[in-house]
Image (cartoon, rainbow, N blue to C red; front, side, top):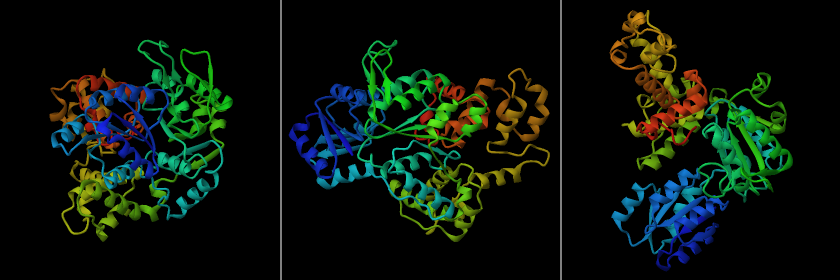
Length: 481
């Protein structure tokens, strides 16, 4: 646990720091937000930042976002000032801690932020084999390629391996290769010098340097551009990187974990992924089973998520009813653990019985069955998106298609009211955002359903943000990418 404390806090800073140190945290202190952001940009990693309420927390969080540094921020202030607490939360802080510091409160915040479960739910034989392999190779320095369908828990497995390794005291740095624009990913990985390109106003330490002495996770590596793949291969082989705008190489000591939901061997055959990089990454391959392949874990995981979100939302914990269990077991869970987690989050909020009733379990399968029951026999059946969306995909796959030419089929699906009078751009936007919501914010999965590249989807999302659409309201959009 690495804690950064920013500000003077009227002498209480030392007390807060001592409490954190006693709880096993490594503490660094910065006088103001400028010093704090500078330290983070230059490789001083932190798992949590505590900021004096007198500092400009809004600017600090904006600077973090601009620098693509992801770290939770907690505001602190002398006395329990309700207005200050509300303002801090509105500016983006996760919590507000009144000072002088209470040892138990600070301990609880640190524990909540850094809570990592070193045990995995793995009662099913299929999952037991995977965890046994992970336990065996975790203490080594081997590069690991973790594969599996979207939502199977590849990043969770990555953290599990890190926590079981000799590097567990070092940083664990995750980089989502699919979520970062192509032209920024190289700087994100390797860093840059001041003036390296337009907008590079200061030196930036990349994720490889930030992960020095620990583990770096290259999430969804199959989305990486071939030109950058070559530079990554050199970094792996030589154990050194070169910042953009510099001719000097920097030695790095990192263990590399990578994930992909694609068949990389097929990508190699298609010329989309470098064969030499594939062999460098695939020293050990851990293939995570889908939720359908580990049925014994279904109910245990469902109850775990129900308890978790009951606590998060401050509602009573409830057991699953027998009918709810049967409904969960009957679902295909194409979105895997991510879909199950989202379903149980909803269930604990809408449940009105003493036990979670079956009607509170709103699964994709049950919604599709309901939609099919309401759809006329001659109408296209839904398959993952709404019937109106399916009609749009089928009838408007080319922008040159005429809406009027398919008017009769649209009327049969009841979609005419939702399409006529709207522009193609409006319908496309709703289709993309609804599909993204359906995929719980997973952009890779949404792109596959829509039949577009992840890059095209990313550009569309950026366009919608620029137009004022609140993308953060999409289910899970800030979490999964």
